[in-house]
Length: 122
Image (cartoon, rainbow, N blue to C red; front, side):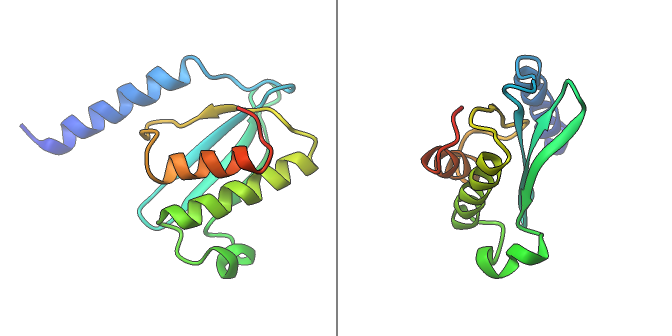
C-alpha cells in the first residue's frame, strides 16, 4: 500500500468533516487557513456573498521583513496577530475557524491562539 494514498485519504476526510459544519455568513465569516512547508496564509471569507474580506500571507512582500520565514510557529503567530488587527479594522469581531485538512497543532494552533489574543473571537 502506498503511504501517500493513505495520507491523502485521511486529509480529504478530515477536510470534509470540518467543512461540512463551518459556513461563513456576513455576521460571522469563515476564517480559512492554508499551510505549506514554506508559507502560511489565511483568509476571512463571507460564503453568502462569495467574497474574501481580509487576507494575510507570509508570501506578501510587505510582510516578508516582519514575518521572515513563513514555515514556523513564530511566523504563524505574527500572522495571527496581523490578521486579527486587519479583521477588526474591517469591522469583524467574530469568525468561524476553518482549519481545513490540517490538525489543530503546531502552526495552526499558534496562529489561532495569537488571533484570539489580538481580539478575534472564535
